[in-house]
View 1 (cartoon, rainbow, N blue to C red):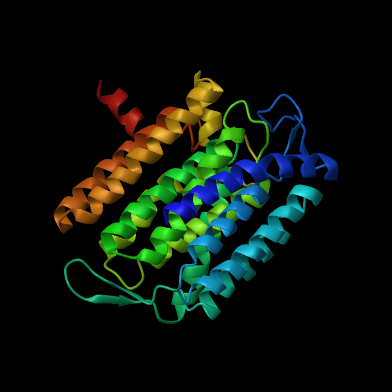
View 2 (cartoon, one colour):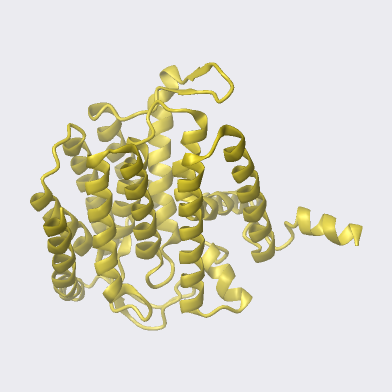
Length: 345
């Protein structure tokens, strides 16, 4: 395992400059515009280096699991979609189609889906025919959540690295060697890429990276929490709390403003932090801290009693609501709790 980790790290450090040259040659360049934070032309397509390094480490580690092949096929499909978008700027519908196919491969051919959950106070909730579509929605949702949060240098890679590390710790607790190997190699691939991608970035991962990372994290999170209690089902949601929160309120904003869900805006979490006065680097580091805290909460949550888990959930939800209101994630006029406090004062 140690050799596989070292090989993965060396691979991503070697592959990234090569991919950068390839991106420049192919014209896969992120140019500054009203939606971009960058002020200069930066090559994208860096996700190929992450994918290649991960696969290199996987060849060395050689994990033996029946889920491996469907996961790799799905990852290949999602990476192809990302590369096409980086090169050709394909439509949101086209990307969604590829995401659906990739998720379908894992769910249908890999048999990865949540069939039921045990309720905390007795009884069981069986999803029945909804099992497959709900799992596909989860995979597509998390894939897009990581894609949407990729708005600042090093943000998606760092958040994905933290999420992967948390998944690895949870896998150690559950003694799941396959998820340990996959999560650690994914985290190392992200860590090595950050050497080139952290502010000021020399290369962006592009959709080839963010879609791949979102897909892999969504699947790995699902692997450890099939057919479990409803309390345990909260754990992967906590681990991915920040990208989920950002995506959820992006949807709320667009529905509220009668815009298409895929419509871009400048009110994502990282935009709001910068608008509040934080620098580019500070905004990224703050989101890292938030991801680490939620990852720690997920680990603590997994070891808590039912009532302890419920208390942790309430505290986290309240904290997130306050952050949403302070930063204006749901819109500048959305401040129910802060408004109530002001009225009482």
